Image (cartoon, rainbow over all chains, first blue to last red; front, side):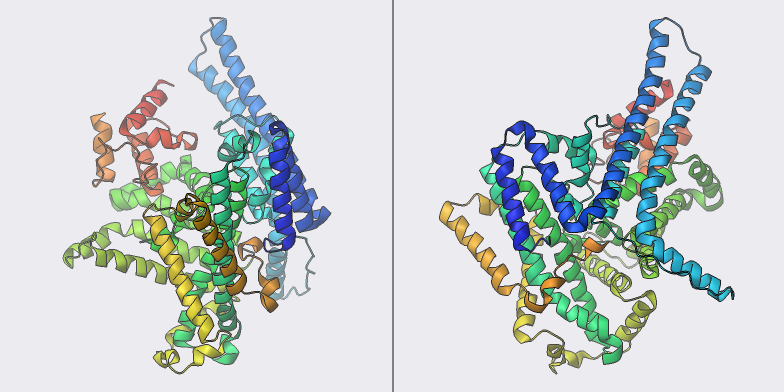
Length: 538
Length: 75
């Protein structure tokens, strides 16, 4: 069931209808049934086995970890009640024992569930590389690839559940004692397709509590849904026609210079409209049910540095990496020791930032590989990590250069330069995520810089790559429109709230205009099947 | 407390730590700053702030950081 099918609309409307009719006590059960129906429909019965295994094992491991923690607490309380004063050695002994036991269940849960993800998603990547290495050493023999099914949203629900398990281990909140409620948190249908990677403490209560019909909330949700369709069908799909042509045929067609530059630039808008449009659709759908998901985007193209870009793009993945990869590495005992000796060697500033720099490389490497099992994503991760960490690493140097050149870093021009620079760096990085392979990406970047063919803008050659003049005009106007809306968002003006607050006829004019814009200007036809989301495959 | 303020302003001289009330929520401190701050505090106050203590409410204000230090010292 794609989000653009009539089936999805009917499914969503029926779910909303039943959801608000049934007694409030069982609303969550309606969502659970709807979520599993959606999941089965999308991935088949076989895929359901995997999400069930993750749900059951995470639920049980979390309960067990909590039980161990409570037993430890009870021992402390018991000693206190009986007036017995425990020595700090005894206290530490008890604590270490409980941590050791908890860790067994945590590691088992992580190994099993990330193991499933790794085998299903990266199995063939590992097999291919071992095979290639063996061939290189003359050991020959092709190891056959296996055909794994890749269950819908497996990267997303694995990250969601493992975040929960680590939080329970850290004692951040109590474990869920109701299995079916937990199953809903894992499989909640708007979130399962392409995120956001929600956190249990933001979601669980909302999913469980009763929701009353809210006119205003429904309207803003509906508007957001339409806005998502608009971004996806009118902008992303249209840009995709040109982008696909250039990225697939640049070699055979001999595309160079500005043609490749425009394709890369447009790809930036395509993937933004695609991913954030998809988010708007699922956020809108969820808002109509009265459940608010965790925001995943904040006007990324207004970022002034690559690290700021990553604080605005796919924010829930960045947040996950920060809490469960970056911080644990930086705050480990080994890191503390390393930091001390680095400070002695390289002075305070570099000593302080080298460990987090290393940790951010690891985090971005995982972000890269998270996108898929290919070397190009590894390069993509390293590329991004280099720019993110160089910010901090060379902060002092940059500041000195600015002072020497008498640049006011608060001025409008410098800010604009920063935004442009960030966009360009991200643009180059995207060759690796979009290119067919890492080598292909390098070849394309070379081809981009090999010619200064400004004439492509006047000799009509851009009109022969899938988009005619009318479609180019429309695309450019719509991208400008998208950026204007983002500009308002950046200034704190939420346009859909304004529209939802309008008087009845004005509101409906906007709704109709939006619906017709999607229907008339959307790209369907031969590309209809192509309207699955880019991030759905990650 | 002065000791903590000195330590903080050495890491981020541009931030008015005494008056800011949402250092994390307003994204004044980023994750690299947090790591630097935690490292310095651990060294200077001889405590062990670990990843479980990294909650926004523990780092939003200087007072909150000071409370965390006191709590860990007493453990």
